[in-house]
Length: 70
Image 1 (cartoon, rainbow, N blue to C red):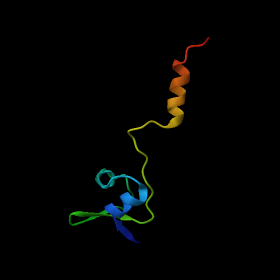
Image 2: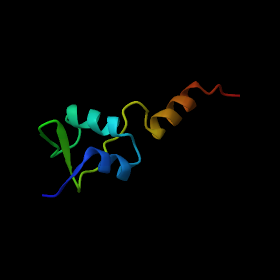
Image 3: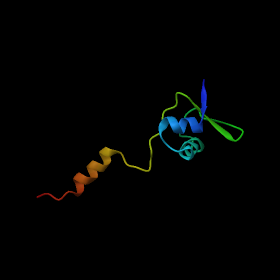
């Protein structure tokens, strides 16, 4: 299995290096391993969803629920 650094992964995914480190420490990237002080991420790993934001479907459902009927 090929690995890349968190810096390379962050650049590939378009997020900060710190977010990739957070995903690694929280176990959200399958196959990520820590070698000394460096996290290595599999090249084929997929970007985890960002839990800070709700999915678009949930937001539209809430908007429809709160929308007053005329």
